[in-house]
Length: 184
Image 1 (cartoon, helix red, strand yellow):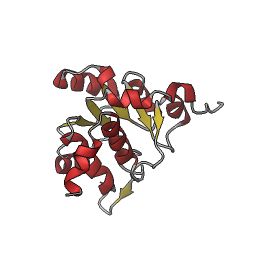
Image 2 (tube, helix red, strand yellow; image 1 turned 135 degrees about the vertical axis):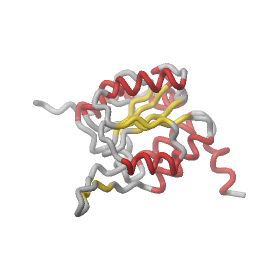
Image 3 (cartoon, rainbow, N blue to C red; image 1 turned 90 degrees about the vertical axis):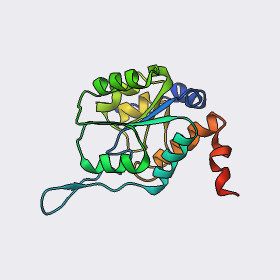
Image 4 (spheres, rainbow, N blue to C red; image 1 turned 120 degrees about the vertical axis):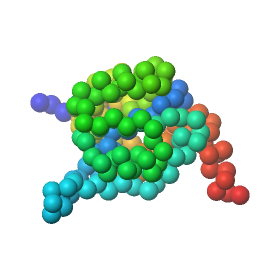
């Protein structure tokens, strides 16, 4: 199979799309983490999260954008991380992410066009093709990169989420206000 290149025409309006986001949704493995799974001696999987991403999510929430997680894998670590960050909408263990997305739209009252989603693999395509702002990471599958409105410069688990959060806040004119307390 030939690997598609990035569709630059499709990606030109990413800032306009980011400005319309009311709910930003994150995949976990490969986005909030680098995609690695480490298994402990008792078979438990561990994940590593980035603190820059975490603060970005909290700042985005304070700026008025709701956040959510939709992940095909089930992990108590994700529940813990979401609770630490105040992410209210967490859907895990659902391989057909459209089901979780429909529940999220109903719970939040927003449209698909008012959502952003960052995912990295073909399992994410059904959502990436529906949302108003589709994002992936540099290591995302070529089919995903081709269809994304924006490909982050930072990798998954390495600041990609913070990059997107900052972009959404800048596009919505809330970035300076979100950072103001840190310059006082």
